Length: 147
Image (cartoon, rainbow, N blue to C red; front, side):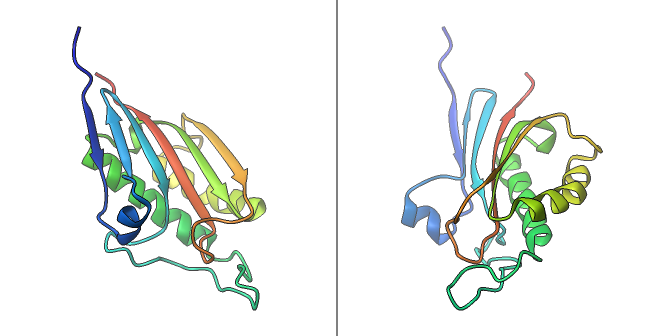
């Protein structure tokens, strides 16, 4: 019986240590990627939403830019574990506004996956809040590396 191989990958951004988690775990040929945000590798948030007087997003016009950066982060973290977006078999998008997410995903997903209809399972879930008040989207992934 072979021993299970377990590897992890992270960016080294401050919130990983604060919340005590890694960005991804690879167990044999399966990779589980924690919810990705739209930040640079240095931890600077990309395209933050403008907040209203109550600290909630005033509009969702930066959804597409946040989504694009989130996929870039997933691409990077998958690469750290020997995979790519081509290996993704499932994604879950957690969003604050479903209509904005549908509009953005119609442009972004075909571009990042290189196909009009990416061959993977996808879940889109509306939520009331995310880790940051100016964040509109978070995406988690599962990838299977072909042996």
